[in-house]
Every structure is written in C-alpha cells, then in structure tokens.
Image (cartoon, rainbow, N blue to C red; front, side, top):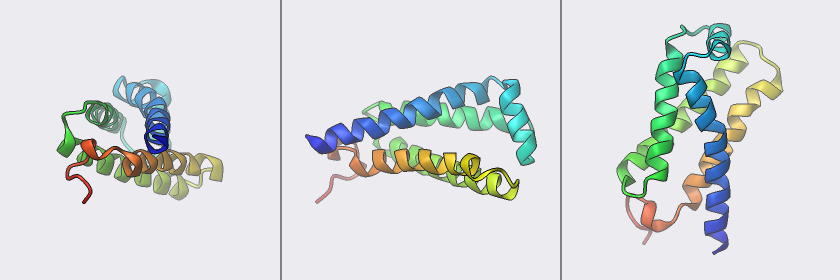
Amino acid sequence: MTKQIWYWIFTILMALWLTPSGVVDALGASVAVKILAHLGYPAYMGYILGAAKLLAMAAIFYPGTRLLREWAYAGLTFELIGAFISHICSHDPVTTALAPVLVLGFVAGSYLLQPDKYRLRAAN
C-alpha cells in the first residue's frame, strides 16, 4: 500500500510540472519561446517538446498503454537530461539547471514505483 501511495505522489508531482509546461510549449507562449531562444533552440522546438510532454502524460495516465508508457518514461528522461545539459551549457544559475533534475527525480520515482499491472512485463 505504501508503494502505491508513493507512486501516486511522484506521478502527480511529475504531472503537475510537465502538463502545464507542455501546454505552454505547445501553445508557443512567449515565455517558452524566450527560454528556447536563450538555450539556442528555434521557436518551433516548443511545439515538438510540448506535444511530446502532453502525449507522455496521456500514455502514463491511461492504463492500457504499457508499451507507450515505457516510451513515455524514456522520452521524458531524455528530454529532462537534455534540458539540464542545455541550461548548464548556457551558463544558467545552478537552481535553474537543477529544476529538470528535480523533475527527473519525480519521473524516476513514478517509473520505479509503478504497479506491476502497469509494467510492460510483470516483475518475476
């Protein structure tokens, strides 16, 4: 029971960060475009990242998508590691650079604590 509670805590924290971020990116909001430009990316990258974040959230919360759920966790991991490296390379403050690492912790907690019924293959 405790594992399930922690799974939902991590999953909800992940969703509370990534869903609004995905919406802002997908809508091409000026704040997202400004951040992407600062990091050296074109504005259209926000549409790609936003759609990917929102689709990942849908795959993680929809119980019938075991294979897509695995891909969603992997994609979020790559995106967040890339965000961390991008902020470091842009000489952003440590607090800004570590924000994606915090979210990556939520993603890792959600992935590692997910119930066996959500996994691609149940644990033996």
